[in-house]
Image (cartoon, rainbow, N blue to C red; front, side, top):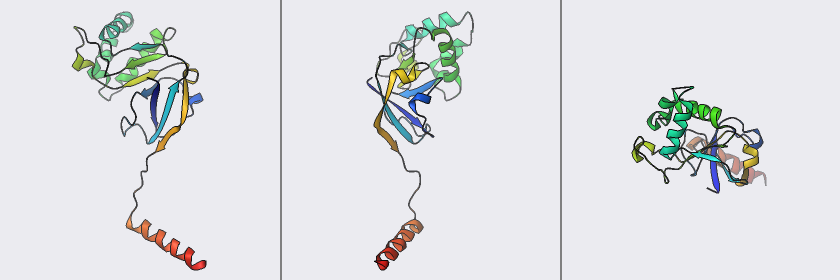
Length: 173
């Protein structure tokens, strides 16, 4: 876990990343997160709750449930990773209760630990780290890590106009 990745629609400098911030353990984890890709390396080891470990997930539920029983709904991996707001709601609750002790959460689908409540198939999900504090102190941007995918397509018209411009330049010389 030495390098993590983040995709943006609009780039935000590391020093301005606040609140819940999602990072991936693998490059290019989807098109819906933006076409600006950045790489980061940890300069300080983060303290992360491993929510890919079903026992840790249950400990989180048990701690939060007396105050907010909705944690059971948000903690269900099918609900959490369904594309709704449950993942954000889950992490906001976890942050509220674990802010002082942890920098965020991690789930690595290659290192899942099931139990009786959450089987391996249920835990299977993303390769992500969610950080909620000390982000500029924990990470350093790798400058060569940015690539911007091209959204525009070359059409016959743009190719033709480039040829015309090129020919005009040649004629002036």
